[in-house]
Length: 384
Length: 83
Picture 1 (cartoon, rainbow over the protein chains, first blue to last red):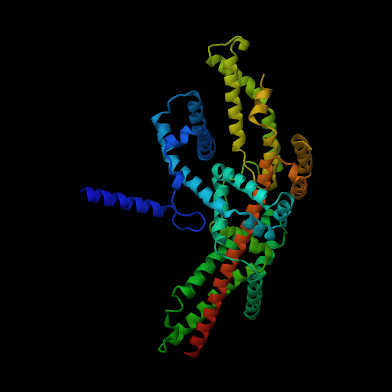
Picture 2: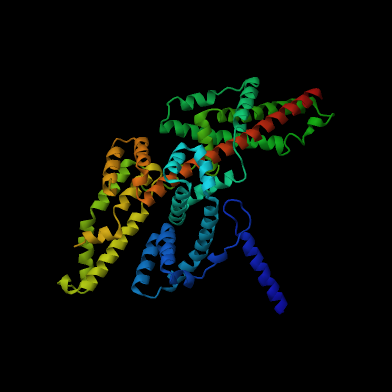
């Protein structure tokens, strides 16, 4: 009996180990030092901050806020809160192990290689050196991976696509071959001319995405028809094929060739090619209602900044509420510790709100610059 | 420039709406930026570079798949016509 239990336990262990995959290569990996209990995580202040204020906050801000406050006040967590933390703990441990694996691939050599693809990165390497640039990248990647799962998944997906593939001049040769084949088959790019007529407007992008989505569907069906047996296992090689069936099959070939040709023609058009890249990297379907960043435009940035600058009125309200909660404190000067504690809590709330703001591209850097000027200490200094 | 001065200048440029100019400003002043802003800027560029490259790879694979299918259709047609 004991032997049976041991075997079952060993099987479970193996199957759990096999279910943990390297985020880029897909090979089995182990959690190693990240196989931590909730107590391990909560007893380490820095780790607790990452777990609750970063990772949990990304998916469940309200609960994260409450739990952080309870822990700060030394209040015992409710069973519901403990269960939530236990549920998130496994995902958090896995994410930490994944981050480490990805960071292992972020070497100065790799960054130099990426710098060859992007002159801006090369410029940064020229300014601070490859070692320092890698350190900056790696640190920021960890922050992003814990606070923005969507962005983490996007980067991981790109790394997966690039894993083990050396890109190079072969692509240009492929474009040339496609162009020649399509000309021989008289497949034009009419479908795209209309879609790209309006230049780089959002309408054009929308049109292109629609075309890509539609044609990609036909493309897959056609490729399946050829490679998945629709063509090769039918009667093409059977000598006793009826004339009608032969004509039908020839017509089908023509239909599928046109569908494939249209997609291939699209790959030669810069705008369509970009729409295809986006389509494929985002999971193969066009999503109209993707979750958006909180800061997408300059107007969003200004609105958020106005909100930040309205801190004094939030502070006054917070003070009034706290005063009531603490049984109508009349003179804060007699309650220095309580006042300092209140400032600390308020500043924490402000920092949490700050972390909620997400942006992409240069706006994200502008946001980081703004928040760099607004730390917990500078917030507390403003509170009177 | 102090961080505050960098922010004021960056916001002034952002007002023009040209994010490329803003990015140029940040790259020119890279060494003066706080480390987390440097990291953010670098991570943006890194993500864009690898996303672009991954997209190219995906399209290349699709091209290979499509060309192969076209070739097979051509061969099958020849065989069908010869029946």
